[in-house]
Image (tube, rainbow, N blue to C red; front, top):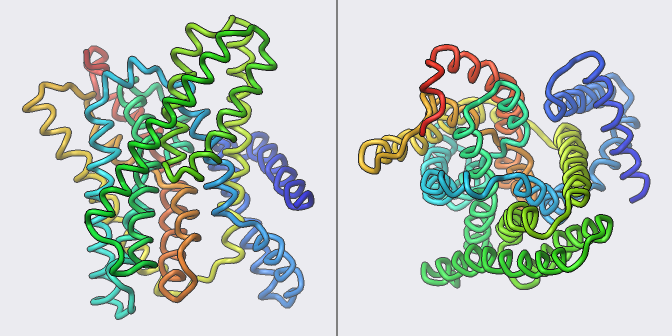
Length: 422
């Protein structure tokens, strides 16, 4: 384990340096691209007769349980760090679009992508994959993961209203998508024992229970922070909140991701304003910003290295190539229809070009890959995993690198007075 951690940190540091010094891409995208290049080099060495090198790399990377590392390790820290810097008042002002995109939008996206992939795989390519597995693919590919793109949006001076919508949606739809995925996976594993009523009950327990649990542990932590004024102890308390709270949420069978978001919002707003001194606030921000940046870089290196142990066939690339525009079209529908309804019937204002920025800025990431890796072993898993990985690579590399120019171009076409709705 020490060797693996040392290798990951060393590679991440090296890739970060090379990217910053020479390539100058956004850090997460740059380190992932370099990890992909390394993966291709290792695969190429195997083809050139150096199979021992490739096998050694596969053994090292295969020893890393990506699903466990992300879903039961990194995710709690990343979600809390992301929620910590979200202004609750601004989030509340955008509650309706965020709520729709993170809940109804995820459910609609799951069904539409699932049906489309089932038709494509079974009827067009003759691949034997069940509708349930296609719905699982829809659930794991629906959550947006704009971690790689938020920095670009800030650099491009994106409208604050759009930035808060994408950030808020990503924080909550991860948790909702995991709950939907869990319900569908229980159908695959449990068969007829799972009913509609039990699935709805599980959703309520996981989602509502996760929010209530996050509120409870967030409040307890807030009271602890308010009773002392020593920044190192307070930082340690927040770290215990995240790691201990997430572990306890898993044992209580409530949504850990949703709990971390709610707890992060409470500490980042009420805790920051009422329970911290200026010194504590500054040190806490620095600590969690570093945790966020370091873990993001390591996560994207892991995504790039996963290529070494995955098996791809020609039809996987073709299916993924056909599914990418379908996934983008579904995202467009899930964004444009509610925005039109909210504009016309509820008088909710949106920034100009909101639809195309929200659509193209809905980047898929590591959570999708981690969920695909958690599927039961079998031929259907291999199909879903390969397609998911290709879609995620496209999303990060193509959408992630072009959303900044898209925002700048959109803003240049918009009068300054119309950029931020009231």
